[in-house]
Amino acid sequence: MKDSDLNSLANKIQSWAQDLGFQKIGISEIDLSKEEAPLRAWLAKRYCGSMEWLNENIEKRLHPNLLLPGTLRVISARMNYLPPDTQEIKILKSSEKAYLSRYALGRDYHKLMRKRLAKLANQIETWLSENNLPVDVQQRAFVDSAPVLERPLAERAGLGWTGKHTLILDDQDGSWFFLGEIFTNIPLPLTNRAKENRCGDCEACLKVCPTDAFPRPYELDARRCISYLTIEHKGPIPEEFREVMGNRVFGCDDCQLICPWNKYAKPTDEKDFHPRHGLENSELLTLFNWDESTFLEKTAGSPLRRIGYERWQRNLAIGLGNAETDENIVRALEDTRKNASALLREHIDWALSQQRKTDRRRKRKILNPNKEKKTEK
Image (tube, rainbow, N blue to C red; front, side, top):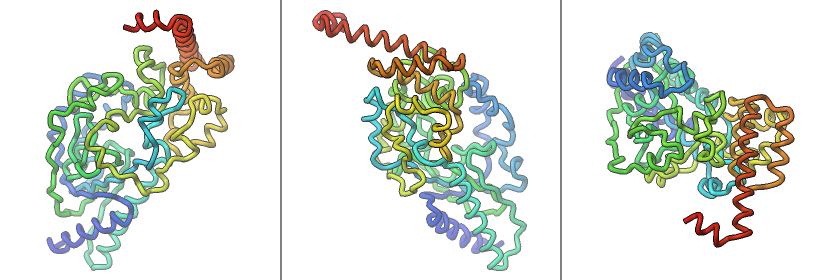
């Protein structure tokens, strides 16, 4: 193919991507050699926790042409997901409310983005055919569905820089977006617009983390991350993290909420990412009282479905333990405990213990508020 044809196609890809709902597209080469040492060091520290799959297919992660033979370029795409008017800080400060990561309030993004990327790949092939450019095209779309180092690829494609919280940041859109890729053997022109890291001296994201999950800037210990603990981790959540989890029952957005660059983030127009079933403002007790059939009904097509009913209740039990003392909460915990699994029962027992502690503190304050104040000092 001539350079003029490749340039025309690259321009078309930008236009088609916008029409498909992507906010930004970039094209990168596939050289990820600089990522090998940091990746292997991170894995050696066991920061991946129980996500053993991250130790698999390392060569394919580092060499995209091993994942899809013939790959020459990666088309990286961004899609905004921040839903409008969900009052994140207000929910986090309401101990009776359940905070769910903003990406999980609507429909699961995987299928939606993969279909859009597949359509974009089809448009590329159609254009080549219509312009009589016979190319044996090899392409494949990915959205968290294979060993892909999506963030380094996005950075190389100019979609943003890696922030100290390890997420991709953009000076116009913040970090509230999903990433997806198309691997292709078409030698498209590179976007060549890698962004300068503009985090500067700011460490707000590191300091706000409730569980101190960042050993140092640009490094995350997943074993301490609330998102990992509430979503990926299948066993008991360590007690040292339960109180500081507060009402965060599925994921955590603290490092994004405090980031100054997110003041530029734009709410998504994608209706599928808007909240469903009132999940942006639900009470912990309401969600805990869902039976399994209700959970399955309400989470159909949602990222919440992946953790299953048992871990859903495990997480909510911790939230209820951190809530203000309430007889209804205690009653619900005790009723559920009767038929709970060993995993869930452990967290319910902890929650009941916390409810009793909170009740004792409240009673002491009512009986002798002056003494309570002195104790607090």
